[in-house]
Image (cartoon, rainbow, N blue to C red; front, side):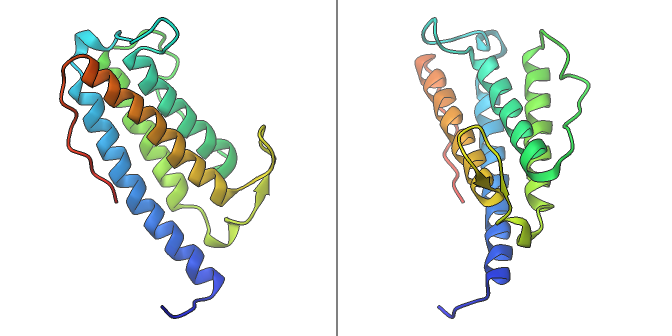
Length: 161
């Protein structure tokens, strides 16, 4: 492999990350749609979130990280303030949240990936924030897959890159 300049590497990182994000978001939405509406209140233990609240948590975390650490503008959607949402509304809001995060990644200037921001766990570069977004998203999607299995539902076929 030929060496490339940092700017080219950063652009490549963002292109590859965006492709990965799009596939991950599509897969998460497939997982969300696999759970019957009447099971969105399911949680395996008292300490866990329900299936629906796990979906909310993914969306809230992605929009928080994208808003505060990538684009500097807040995510807005008419369903955010609604306390009790139907499963369809939950999926609609999650879809919009994942798209907001995708657009934040897509609009991150390559030369800004090294910008370090204060974070509650210590300073993080924008590149690290994007990696955290993927990790957190994947972690909670894994929990959702377990929720499906505990309800006798075969999860959608995995899709990676």
